[in-house]
Each structure stands twice: as structure tokens, then as C-alpha cells.
Image 1 (spheres, rainbow, N blue to C red):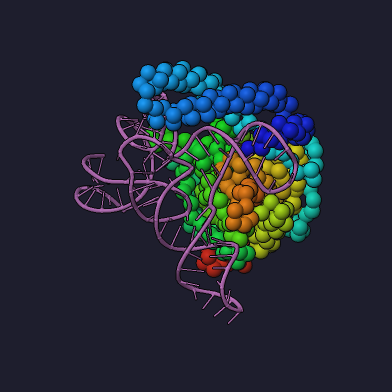
Image 2: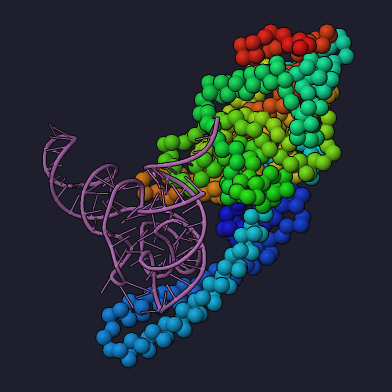
Length: 423
RNA sequence: GGAGAGAUGCCGGAGUGGUUGAACGGGGCGGUCUCGAAAACCGUUGUGGGGCAUUCGCCUCACCGUGAGUUCGAAUCUCACUCUCUCCGCCA
């Protein structure tokens, strides 16, 4: 959510942001007009209320019955006027909320301007993609051959975009989750276990609703929504709270499954385990002071990179341009890991700074000292990392000519094997 | 799933239609006292919106779980919902 004062006082800043984000369809004129109307009506209705409050108190003290009856009749009329204004006000506020809820966050000035993902900028590549002396296989061949990924049975159970991980495949994924959580714990993040289903308000506060409604699974009977990322419950963990400045920053990490309908990606990436309706992810999340958010943000990026470095995987850091930036974020770095079998860079992490955008929606504030005015915190989130794609990278990068897969050193204790062979 | 009880400010807890934004106690903060501290005493202590001033600030409206309603006037009455607790049932 943007500050209405920003829209009111510096509409050009917002207009520039919309242009940079390639959102020419959204305009501010209606919002600005509604905002003016709202304040006008509010003023009228408050004046009437003030009158009614004073007179009502007088009525309570009145002895003269005739005078009393006259005042009551008078105030009844005032009450009717207030009701009429209130009805009008609610209508306007509903329209205003609907429109402002659709305004995306303002990009950080350092974000390169560009209309779409083709204008993202690769900042650096870390590590050398492994050179193979044989033709590396894609995981969709490697996995079934090893008996660790079962696409047929996944489809039998749940349909397309589902799969079963078997034996060492399941163990390898669990090893990755445990390794990531342990690493983040060492880095200083507090691990939390979260609800995987949440209320609509929780999704709204994280910026998923109303915009991404079509990408979410929803239980109509109980009105539960399946989380598309742990970022959603993590954002609301401190929703409607005023924190002490001394408590900040708060660093959290969590493992959750993520559920996505992938309506927007119909027909895309159907092969393999790259894009499923259900996938696992370890997420990092921070609440911090506004003046520290940039520093905390880059530290989080380093923490996500450490996961890939620990696994010995080559990756690159990409900065998203304004047009590819997601709705609620000011700045985003993607981490992409090299997958030699698929022959592409796979996005395994998105590290973003939301500024105070999510904090406004979720109403998360802090106070610098006793009696000081409450201010909005900044929130940061980053995957650390998305599981199926990291699993792909491990399988494809650590494969050997005979089709077996060497287990990276830090995962061996969890997997209980040094090499995964056909089972 | 059934029966009952409850939801008030940082916390505990009063308040059943009018001068209550809210008694009282605790905690916090400021002060007096003190070499310092404790005790005692005094003061203070919510959020959001709008307007004026834009330098301390001032005025006003709303908020006592949430949403509707009754009323000149609601924390207080009515209805619905949510959550918490207790007991019973069921269950991994």
C-alpha cells in the first residue's frame, strides 16, 4: 500500500513509477478526486457529529420537557443527515481502497528501467559451470532412471504438474531443507513453523490479494487459502503490532510447502519438476528500521548466496528491471543456478526489499522510544532457496557418466549416502 | 460436533443508556527527596483520520473482539460473526 499523502502531494512520483513498471492502464486522477471528496464529506459529517455530541450531552441535563423534546427532534434530523453523509463516505472509501490497493510499490531509484524481463541485468556470475566429458542428462531422464523421481505415479495421484520423490530423491530434498534451515540458523535467523493455510486478510496484507487471486488455492467451505509462499504468513507474523525499536531487526526463516495454480504459466515448463502446483521452499524474512533496510537487504542476498556456495553450485545474480519487479517490491535480485541438463539458468531465489509497502498493508509499526510516534517498519524477504529447482541443480551438476549422482558434502549426513545409484 | 463462560487501555480489572477515552491497582516514563539507590509522594502514560499552525502545539471525529441495528445519546441494549477458556463427544 502506498501512503495516500504521497499520492496526494507528489502524484508525479507515483506516475513515473507506473510508467517505469509498464502499467500505463493505471491512472491516479480518480484516486485524487475521490480523496478530495472523501475529506470534504468527512469534514461535513464531523461538524454535524460535534454538534450532536454537545447537544446530546445538554439533553441529558435538561429539565424542561418541551425544550427537551424540541432538541431531540432537532438532533434526530441531524442524525439523518449524518447517516446520509456516512453512506456516501463509505461508498467513496470503498472505491478509493479498491483503487489504491491496485497501485504497485515505487521502485528504488537504483533499479534499472525496462519494460520486461529481457531488460533485467546480470550483475555477476559466481563459480564456473562444471565442464562435462559426457553429455549431461536432464533431471527428467536422470531422476526416473535412478528411481528417485516418479512422474507417472504423481500424475496418477494428483494429475499433471505433480510428481513423487522416491527413496534417496525424497531424502535428498529433505537433506536440502535441513541443510538450508541449519545454515540460516547459524546465520542468525530464527526458525519458525507456520500455518500453511491462512485467512484472506493475511494474503491481502502480503500483497497477494486482490491481484494474484487466480494463482491461489482456496477452500471455499472454510475460507482458508493455501500459502503460495512462506512470505505470506511471515509478513503477517507481526501484523497489527507496534514493535520496540530495540527489538529490531527481526530475522526469521521458515520451511513451508507452497501452492500455486500456475494459471498464468499454462503450458510453460511442463516438463520435469521445475514448476509444480506444490513445491517446497525455505524462506528468509526480516523486519527492520527504514534506515537499515538496504544494509539488511544486501546481507540477506549474501545469506542466500551462501546456500549455493555451500553446495558448490555455479550461479548468477540478476537485478530485475522496473517492468519485471513484482507488485509489492522496491528492488529484487534473482539468484539463478546453472542446470547443465535442462541447459538453462534456473531461478532458485528472489531476494526483495518491500520498503514499508507490506508494513502499511499489514499495519506493522515500531516506536523509536517511549511516547514517540509509531512508524512503519521495512520488510525484506528472500528465498533460501526454492527446493525443486535446487534439487534439479544438484542432480544435474553432480551426475556422473554412469548415471549416478554424487551427494554434495554438506548433505551426506542427512541423506545417509555419498552417492545416489539406481535403486 | 454439543453445553456453558468470557473478550475493556502495556497488564490485571471496574463499569448495564447521558458530564467515561474510560474508576482502581500494577508496570513504564518524568519529577521531589537522596551522595546514589530503595521506599514514599506528585505528575504522566493508546491508536487512527480530518482541520488549523507547521516552532512547543491546538481543535475535532472515530475506536472498549468484528460487523450490523435500536436511540437525541451506546463500552453499557438487540442481532450475527470471530476468537479464547471449561466440560462432554470424536479423532492423528
